[in-house]
Length: 172
Image (cartoon, rainbow, N blue to C red; front, side):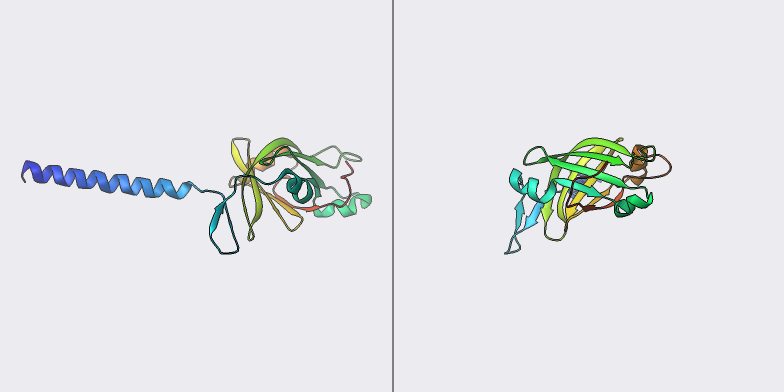
C-alpha cells in the first residue's frame, strides 16, 4: 500500500467517524418547537406571562384530593409564573391530619409546546431532569430516572404522576 493510499484511507476513516459522531450527537439536541397551522416548525421563545398565569399557573392535586374529608392522603402542586419562560413549583402533601410525606420546591424552564404534548417545562432535581407537562388542565410530572422523584417523598411515594388543576386554592 502506498503512502498516499494509506493517507486517503485514514482521512476517509476520520471523516466517517466525525460524521457518525455528529449525527449521534445531533440526535440529543432537541429544539423546542410547536406546529403552526401550516405544519411548519416554529421555535418557542416564550409564552406571554398573562397566558402563563391563566393557563398554567394554579393549584393542582392528585386524584385523592377530593376524598380528603374521608382521610385519604393526597399531593398538591402549586404553580406560579415567574416570567415568560420560568415557573415556580411547590409540591406539598397532606399535613392537616398526617405527617407531610412529600415536599419539593423548585423552578422550571420552558422547554417547548405543541398541540400533541401541551406545554413542557424542565428542571434539575436530585441530579436528574424532571419534566412538568401541562395539557387539558392536567399536570404530569415525570423523569427519565423515576426513582429520583422518590427522594422528595417518604414511605415509597413519588412526585411522578398526574395532577388535576383545581378551581379553588389548594387546602394545605
